[in-house]
Length: 566
Image 1 (spheres, rainbow, N blue to C red):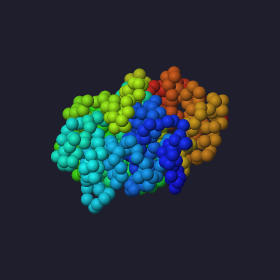
Image 2 (image 1 turned 90 degrees about the horizontal axis):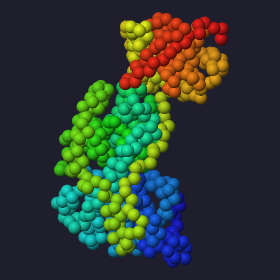
Image 3 (image 1 turned 30 degrees about the horizontal axis):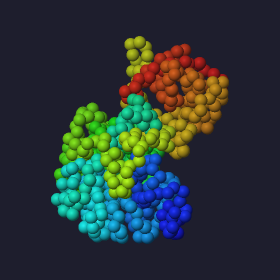
Image 4 (image 1 turned 90 degrees about the vertical axis):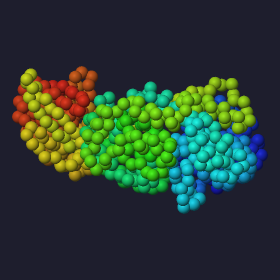
């Protein structure tokens, strides 16, 4: 986006010459960081819908250390953007910002500041000095001039501000929290979000949330995503990570993904903080967080919370500080599976209700209150179209990563009915530690053709092709090629329209079917065959194998065609 020239429409010299809509008022949105910009963009459609009287322009402030991504986001949305240097030439009717770092603003127009997190919960580095300041408080100049209005989500925040910054007295407005209201409205779509994120009904979604800075979760424990993925079985858990936008803005998206490369290869879902964290939080079964606002939102929604880090920035007496004293701590160096399971099992949905009461007053009313406030500051009557209630967040983008190689551990026992019952535990092979076989517990490496790491695929005992199902008549030839291309593999498997076909290196063909209308993973089909062969379970013309995959049990029927010549 080129901001080297001043814009002429809908503001600028003689803007009426170029306008299509005869706007009566101008609202300027301060665009300083992705964090603050997204917070304003989340509410604007509910505030100014159906009203051509208000011209909205976005003033890009390049002064933040975290300004990366702002112009790209504005350009992608088609927002009319002017350079910050042009702002002194305007006399807007209102400036709206979710960042308190505004600098000098010549003129006498009002300034409405929304919090870009939850209230005034923590101390942050002051860009104007080497010290710290309370997040959310504007400059003394704006407060002294009586131009600034601070939106708060709870009356206690106004009292807190007045005690620490006396000039805020009388300059706060109880609005509520629009984001919290939308999160509550989104809970009815929880199953839809889970499906969009690729979370199966029997899986638990563990969401890691990190704010920015060296005291954050990702700053203190950068290996935590990989450690979780290395210990949580993939058939029982999914792991997602949302990072504060300042992490990506400060270090660059390329660097962030480079640091998370192994975790991404092991199935980590990296959530776009500008488009998806709310849906991931709604879908989550467990939140592992820090002193960022997402952790407090998760607690308020009734999610189990484990704190992996909690910096000293939390202000005593606030809801965030109370959460730091209430939530259980994660021990990152200790085994993680038991800690996760315990947190899920022992949680009560009302555990953090008192903390939500400290942070959010009168939930559900934020958008109507904010809309009336904005129109009052603009000096206009709201249009006749009705207020809009909190809207559920749209479905998130589908994840782009998938695990293509697994370390598979099987423990097999024969049942009284003559079936083979096999307990299966799969971990991402790229992270899984070495496992020792013992008794009736066996390990093997299963790799799909989609695996880009040849070290894994060429070491696999089982090779699969899970792409589009192959016609049954084409299966034998395809399996022959797989076994020829991967001479270290003992078994090869592929999907067919009615199940899976598995071939052994000694030329046996086994058809594997699940219950009707049940999808079957070729890796699991081959695992059933592998378990039978390892425990010398006879492959009769029809053999039943009961697979236990965490909370899910799947009955498979194996049909052996015996030795063949292909």
